Length: 207
Image 1: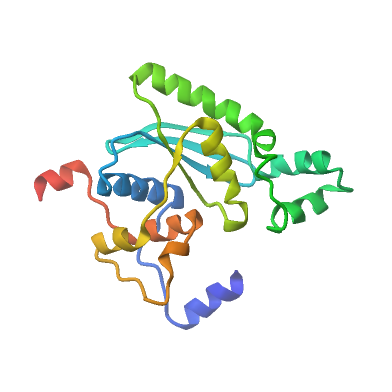
Image 2: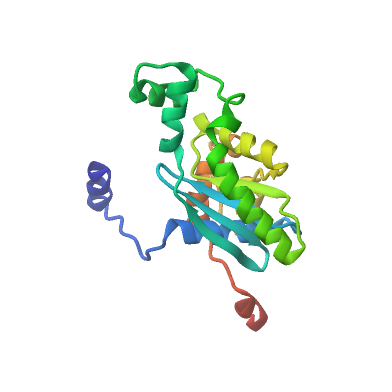
């Protein structure tokens, strides 16, 4: 990483602003919900190594925000146990190898996370009378894309599939023809969200 940073500095590339990745991802996702005229509240998850950030989003903003002390690292011991592997390092390598289909094991690996999510979803739906119909996971590498599908299936939610090409075009962002946008997974969302400039309701009213 340091080598890449030094190369950028050598090229004279400097940031002109600093942003928190989570904040930009939330803003970008809300913008996409508005762009697609989505009427349903959406469950957005940032599944990290140690924790998972949980958000319920609507076109009006952030409805729920909380952090759950459960991430991918918490699944590794379960993989080791279920597959009788010799150590956690072997389980981790297999988990990210894309050579084993964890879909069938998914509900067991995510049981604790699902329990926390169901509690948050139940609280929101009772308080608002609205049902959360969509799920969107950022940060997930393509090798663990099954995780989003598993959570969606168990929770009975549609997984949001972002149309990057049309969304970027709506924000006047040009993507090279060499980039196959239909093959981009959710882990790219954070990068694209950093490119957008989003207006709040007050800004739009004043425009």
